[in-house]
Image 1 (tube, rainbow, N blue to C red):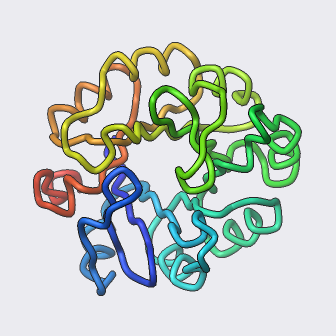
Image 2 (image 1 turned 120 degrees about the vertical axis):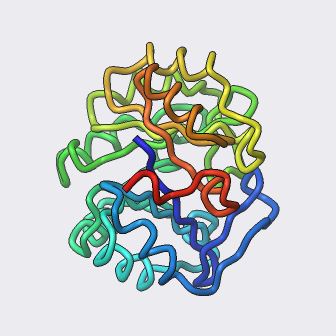
Image 3 (image 1 turned 45 degrees about the vertical axis):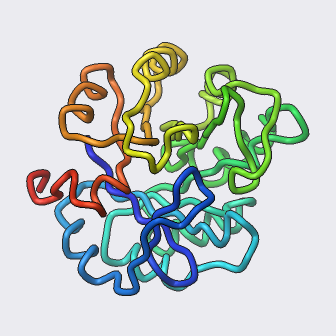
Length: 228
């Protein structure tokens, strides 16, 4: 399954390279809402909230009323998760708050699952150089993504993994990483980071993984019309 990605910064749709350099920016969300309306799921990330530099909460809520979204970025407590779900998000994505110091905050994962239901939770275990990243990809912890999935699996429906080493570069997702992560969890596995073609999406699907795609859609490498 292809899951289009909408990343928000300053009220605009953007695409960043490896979470750092802005490569694309779109002022008007309406054309993309129309293009994505035929998809069963869209990923919506509030980058400002993830980076603790404000948020795009009202725009997020507006988009959740128009598209079937799983929403992440700055979801650091149960109240925010419940607010987004009440606003129409299908699922919420939790990342940094699942990690404390150099360890995994299983207590918070369990609290979230009790409060909103594990079926509405996607846990993000993004990594660079084999280590899980936190704080909008600004910091890392001494935990690998496969280990994190093994320990967090009881409290979520899906895992989102972004391979930040290749994110935004359109160089392809490393298949050996996809295979390793597929073996680490029985939950839905959603992969992102450099996915650049329909053939690659199909290959990842044969491995049992769904694909989040941003840059390849916004640059026209993957026409979205063929997925409706």
